[in-house]
Amino acid sequence: MPGLREPDPPGRDHSARFDDDLLGLDPDDPEARAFAAHLDRMESQRPAFTVEGYLAGVGAFADSANRAEGGRRAGAVAVVLALLAVAAFGVWEAFLFVMTTWW
Image 1 (cartoon, helix red, strand yellow):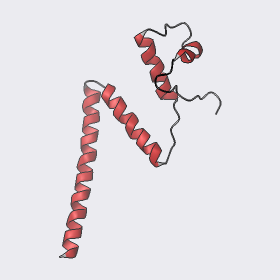
Image 2: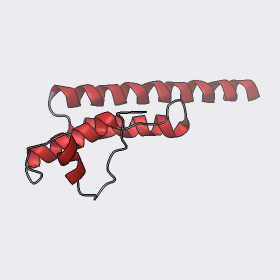
Image 3: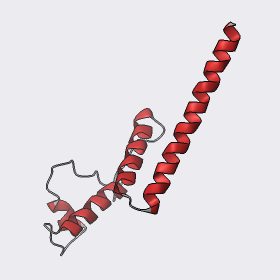
Image 4: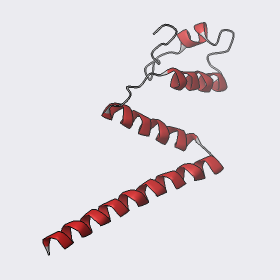
């Protein structure tokens, strides 16, 4: 698609990003590098409706939760705990169904 580009692979110099999108910013500035990384995350194209796409989404959620602080981090932890509770409930119900069916 026009206007979309693949993110730079890890370890690659982001000089093209600074030449194109961040013209005039210092590539050695940590804040500018963090913004360039943010732009790379925003413009990355992930496969949708595939196992790889779902796993990439979970990885992106984990990365953003690790960068979060304060209330956002607490919210991410609450979401993860809720998902684990639902999964544990489903496993427990399946276990009870199997045990009551066999006996």
